[in-house]
Image 1: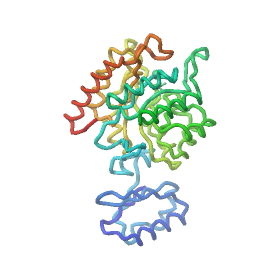
Image 2: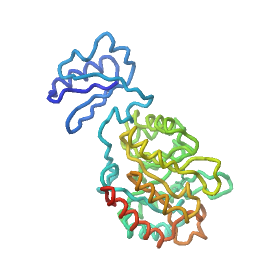
Image 3: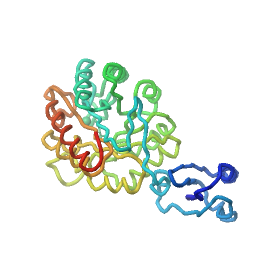
Image 4: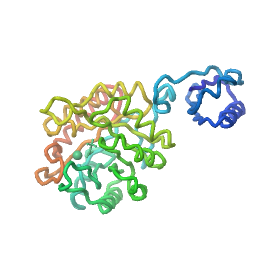
Length: 338
Ligand code: PEP
Ligand code: MN
């Protein structure tokens, strides 16, 4: 339920309404917009039937949220969320945030080299997995804590923030210590215990859409994190399973405007995993920016033939440099910036 307050509502009137909601064991969230303040309410709304809130001073109207996801919906929070990631980097505003790096952290030297390349071209976030969700248990599983420490060193040397995948609730203390943004991968989008755990963290979370999940399921997963109190949440479209086999996944380009309309959360596009092949990555990345993505997370590698994971889809440094120029022009054409 959403309580829309009158333009000249006083702090005292707001406190009075919040006290009432808390007495009824409902969970209110206050959003102060430029023109209006609204209060979102989660909980058993039936309790309010006997005591209509419309009667309270300062209340203009009370509306039910029609969607099953509440707090992440645009109805709940009219303005787009602008999320502070650290070191002055924000996502959800005018600037499109570029996150680049290897699929997985391989060695300290290679990570630092790729970090310098990413930084040199204008990325502000370094991607790289230290805990990898591999299809085969015999494949490289990631460097674990050592990899996270390399990300910290890369941040110290280049200023780049890190985004890195967490797969196990027991690892949260490690991620809180070393990571800047916690990635929840496509395979774990519906791991509800993991979602609740990162929902209690104060670290920003990048939630990837499952490869066979609807937008509604994606937003319900986001609601798990948001409703636990973590509002630094970013959504990521990374392609769906389809009958098509020339690409690895089918990027749902339409999901970008849909998500921007249905939620207030920033939306990032991953062009690498749907492409599966570096030839297709630039076009998908450009389409992502054109469709309104707030960020791009892309895999790069200086020697992809030596990569232990996802080498074929990694952009070579010169391809990444060219793509940055193109994305900048597209961003400018739609009133944004990189
Ligand atoms: C990744 O980002 O390297 C990754 C494994 O992504 P996804 O969860 O989208 O497959
Ligand atoms: Mn990958």
